Length: 628
Image (cartoon, rainbow, N blue to C red):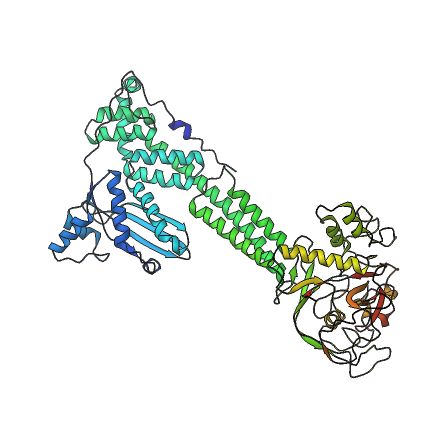
């Protein structure tokens, strides 16, 4: 978006007429100024920045400008010492001006807080309008505490330059700001122009040109200068030297006798532009903050309506696109506000993707696998009230370290992502991956070209994959997350051990099912033989258990890391990992499936399947857990 200042063209008039140019008049007598100590807040005093330090540098900058006659700091100190007067901010500017003979005192305030330097400088009248502020400017800049001493001199230089500007320079700065769309700077410049140039007197003088019919003489007047501002300064010099007739001709040429009204028009255009830009930036920030708030809420919700990372990405993209728009001229404050919010959102997103945390759920970027944190603990299968068909084991297992388990079974869409993000693989390497997947099976969700088959959804569990394929998936994910430095030290992505799986399934209960000892309510928590049409369903379609995991009962059997043994827990043990091998090449599967009866859906139910083959009703769920 860009705003087009329609009146700028009225200022761009030919400035030179005639063969000879008149030299610029010598400047009026310089004003005498003195620089008083600045008031410095605690934020700067802690960094050893004093009001004297700032005042000294301000004096040096004003001296180099050549605009004023400077009563030096050394002379001020000498006069005050002779009169036994204590210097410092407590000495009023008007009193200091009278003591040292300065018509104006330049002073101000400085502070450093919340990572920002704020510097204010004012030019105070000590004569006929004693105490009146003739000029005042402020500047704010964000920086680290260690950079304050390096940033302040440049800020002082900028403010000293503004204090030293002529009315014509304010005019030129305002016009350039209008052309660039920096309406705040234009308003500031035109405001200062109105203070410095006697616009009403100029308007009255230009009227005399028309009254005396001197328009042709004005048109033939040779006027030095290359900009409207230089032309204005020339006319003001003539006026202040008493050459009112020639000054009137210059002003007439400059503004066609409409200077005061034209300045007012430009000021209104600048104010309107500033207001529109403020509204645009306000709307931008409000939209970005709304998405950021939604991302924070979504992170903490059990059932996410929107992916928090996507919300963050959308907000940051909006802000960065706005910042990179060459047609939008932003002040340092506006740019800083947008950049601050951008950094805040990016920091949140980085923490969101910084790796699993014991305090919250974790979403793996890209593949978008959601993980639920599981703390250490102990479980057993003794309900205390034996029920018919209840599967129990005599031992108890302890989980000594926290881990994270998939909120859902791995879906066809996530497995498709894995297959398509293998990098540059040779034909042989691709064959080794594909041979473990029964793409030809009618119940496999994917084709050999990694497309979803008709009738399958990306949210359905991935089936027809062998235990080795599930292991390879986990090895790839571990490699990717280690490369991204998001894995906790000593952890990996893998299939859960039997103990980890049952511990997460029970969610703190000792009953046959995670919700009780009977099948009452099973239809609300599981897909199984009685409520399906012989096919799996999209993950998460039933109620979660108490720890927030879905489909631990039914839908598809889930591969575990362990080799299958006849007995699971025959005694109390910590972090069991099962036998070292299986004579029949069987790996454990847990949870039952859409083809199972209720007894196979119990927390302790287990089965062994050939680890080299895939089946239509076997899928898998991953964990981020201690390396085995």
